[in-house]
Image (cartoon, rainbow, N blue to C red; front, side, top):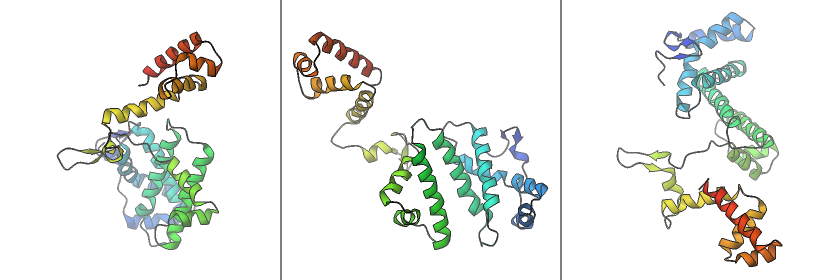
Length: 257
């Protein structure tokens, strides 16, 4: 996704202006004083910053216009919260804000469901981290964040892990021009072949799609080595019913394995 000669949200990005640091310093008091013309000039002058950030998310298959609009929200939030008394360049402050806004959008629209309360805790932890970073002049550790939030360290860790972006097993983590190293190579069990390892994950996922009774029957039949008659006696149904449920469950699992 190149910056030049690309149209995003109906805007030819090659025509976007570039604002200087000196001009931004002139605009800050006007913007914070409520001057809408100065605000529009400031935001438009930093749209290229948003474009440079969304390039990091270009391989996710997301709509570029959507990412750009979300990034602009992060830019505006950065402008509204920027402290001009701090000896920090605006871009240094704004980039993490834009990235955070885009990541929040991606997480909220993720197919993997994370409870709202856990997401809220994670976002508060990220905000606390940013505040502590400014106070301490360094990146705070999880224990310090948890203490400031009056939470257990494990709670903060769980919340932050819950909003991490999922990564494909075939995502390359290193490539020197030869054979690439993938995530799967880093986490797999060397005792098992890749096919066996992935098959085990698929079976586990497929099992979760079955009812409790179907899972119980398959476990007794194929993990415990019980006969259909033994399963029928323990579950309290006929051998014919066990056979039917077993076939139905296996048929369902084949769709996902």
